[in-house]
Amino acid sequence: MKFLKSLYIHKQFYIYLAVISLCFLVSFWATILYPIAWILVIVLVVLLFTDLLLLYRFKNAISGRRVLPDKLSNSDDNLIPLTINNHYPFKVHIDVIDELPIQFQKRDFSYKVLLKPGEDHSFNYEVRPVERGEYTFGNLNIYSSSHLRIVKRKYQFQNEQMVPVYPSFIQMQKYDFLAIGNHLTQIGLKKIRRIGHTSEFEQIKDYVIGDDYRTVNWKATAKRAQLMVNQFQDEKSQPIYSIIDSGRVMKMPFNGLKLLDYSINSTLAFSNVALKKHDKVGLLTFSKQIENFLPAIHKLTYLNKILEALYNINTEFTDSDYGLLYAQIKRKVTHRSLLLLYTNFEHISALKRQLPYLQAISKKHMLVVILFENTELETLISADAEDIQSIYHKTIAEKFAYEKRLMVKELQKYGIQSILTAPEELTINTINKYLEIKARGLL
Image (tube, rainbow, N blue to C red; front, side, top):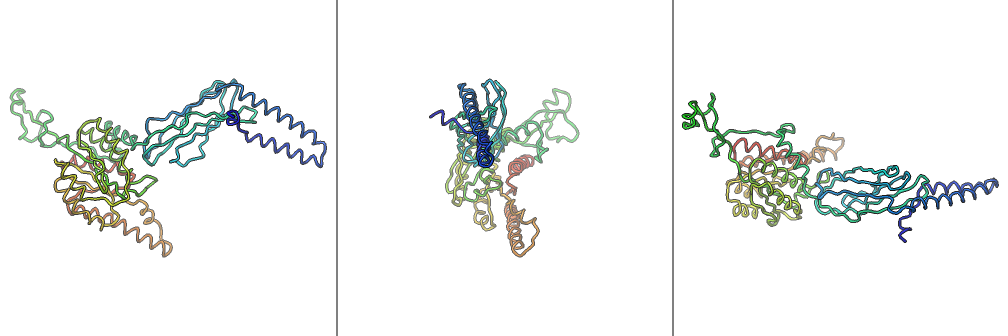
């Protein structure tokens, strides 16, 4: 039974059968082909048993291995390495079929290669998940066939391997590298260092023309016999919270990724940058109830806790309770903090219903409301209107786009900071806003 399960007929075998069948058919009129057809049958049978002997003579003649990472990064291209080893003493044709997780909906994965005797072959393929959760890889199927190409022998490896998909840690590492390497300006991010007069002392330096005489350090001046001044920097370790609305408005997908997942990826990357800037980071997620609350802490290992919390966030089909959000912030966030609120409003009326709560929050904290542009509307707006229906669609699209800009103006009117961004540019614009607020000393 095990032998039969591993035995497959090569498609070339059916070509041979078709040729023999044609010979038998033609022999009805040309009788000379009849004995030739039977000779071909015998040859095919001999080749069949020879091929079976070649492939099944050696035990475990092919080995394969799929190397899965500990976790996959959501919305990014993740490399999956495969290694195949040929232990046959002759060349074999290899056909690899990997059973990808059902979430990818890909059933045509195939990789073909010709391996020499004793040769090891490695290659990579990419997968791009767009949902967080557990992804289960099925069997790694390897089909080997000899140069006769009559039958194929199937080998199976690594059945049912599970790997979790986490928020985009690849994106996080990308911005971490840029921050460390001082290359943020290359992608439009502003990295500004502001020398201020806050309570945090940085160093004593030589006086130069232009320095504020009020910062002269007279003791150091007396010791060095030259003017020395105190230099201060913006206060560090300020509390910063990422607040994610997980209500139904965040289920809208763009390029296969929900707004919620764009927000989660941005929160992870931003939190990493803020920690490197010596600020405290925290997390709050809400819909009809408060789902997660992590107090703001400055600790690099705290990022792992944030990552685990983000992994388990799911979108609800209900409207979010901003009154509950206001009460939670008032009770739990006691110090003035920077609050980045990831949410979305499609109509100005929806924003106005929640505006009293946003105003109340902004009285004590620096609130930044992050809204998403509907990039699909831009396609409609830029398209030429050729008939009445397309004119109607374009007019409605322009109305929705205008309402988004109107929301930004409405928030500015009440002194609330805002970001209106395309989903793909969310992380860049969020970090940019954070650096701008730090540079201007608004917090």
